[in-house]
Image (cartoon, rainbow, N blue to C red):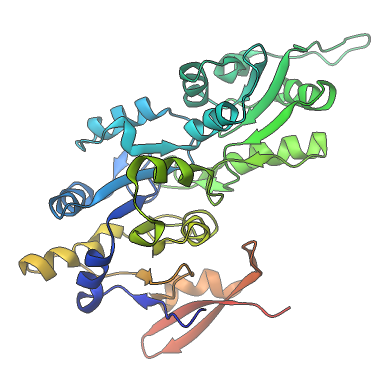
Length: 357
């Protein structure tokens, strides 16, 4: 692990983190909010970090909204965030086409929602599909030929609550039959926090369906791939070693930070864990700087990685039982990572280590 040891964030090392980071990159679903419900302590913590002169950037794999739409959501929740502080996978998909000189005369078919359509329009591309095709049906009968637009040069697949058989067939025909048609995935998240009470199928489900029908793998433009990082670096002129990626998913957020060379903070405010606020522990920063009382904060799991490696986590035994039952391997692109659980008194340390082949 390059000689670096991952540590739990604490009062003792929080100031060192604050001093060593110029920009905090935040995931949104499960970190800032769950569905339309803001996670406790978010506004205060963001205000605190801004007061220390830190740049705040929001990097989300959720493609259902454009940057403009996300800015409106932030404001509706009482958080002032500018559109240019938001980097979504919908924006990333449009920018991928733009930087690769996608022909303007070609069209883009979208399995996804308004966010992708709006970003494509802002980038100057013509899009088909989206929510409108969610209302279309097909009839499977003799002598019925499903027609598709031969000028479609790319298919973008993202999170789509309106996905149906029509969209799958349209995307499949474009990728199979249109010469050189690109297959782009906004991300491959299996599930996501689309509401505050439970997880829902993620874009990975839609992408897997198209992979199955076309027998092709997509170009993925969201986390954990670092395509978006090029735009962050161009805008903020901050080296990645002075950035910290904060997220609730090992396979997207933390791996994104790893791949880009950022420091990383992993929290269990999101997937497969009870509802725990990232910001409960980040408020330790306020204690360090301003000696605010901590009696109304319950310090839960949050880990800091000084290098670009995955963090160790601490959790009470009943909350790691699910992980203990089936510790499988997490592919990282740099070998596999295997969870190991070690018992230390009342708490257990859930350490992710590289698995030996």
